Image (cartoon, rainbow, N blue to C red; front, side, top):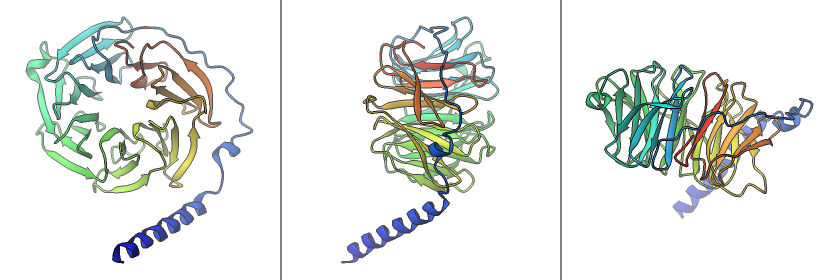
Length: 336
């Protein structure tokens, strides 16, 4: 009887929360944007192809110099590329064949990476032999799924299959803050561009996206309207919202100010899961990579698909827009 009472109380609280959220819902995004001119043409072409990995590419990250990028693969290699010339500037062999996470530091002097070794390692790119200067920053109890530097080279944030996120001090390798709240593997995270490293969002196999306060370690908002695993998450350029991509073949836009979902990006003809998402510099376009080898481009304000980009021979597992918004790179089939 006690369990039934608790279940009933939970349902009552959920209804009250939904009512409070409804009070903040004073307008519909799609209806409000009806008078805005639609996007009629998206002129995006393949400019460069980066080939060098011998296995499926699992992760990538752009440098702030807008020219270099790092990628990791199932072949156990970390490659640093010059995107202008397509040359490989560094090729580092890792301790594990599944290197699932990588990130460029803000200064461009370091890269962080990890995978099935459960560890986050930092490599200095200015050294002649980066592998000999490798620094172990932190270790999870399960695989490392994602990582990102926190506004400087001195802190790195990681997400893991052990359902936690951790903020580490790079110099000492000490844990600064841990974040517990997911009920499944953490698959993706992203730092808010407007909160100076104080807020981030994570998403994972529990179908939920959690918004965290970096200082307290507390989950301050939770969004769980997806019907399957959430594979990717990315903040809107203003920092007021974020988008998620899921195995349920949809992308969803959540607004932090109104604490609710404001748009869903899906079509009946899109049957495969979404593995990666990112915004254009203005935030008007949403790029989403799917398991059917296609990169779909959505109009964020209209929730309509405006382009389909082809070029890969396998599912698109990761994509990132260049910091200046001039290009987008997607990886999976051993090439970008």
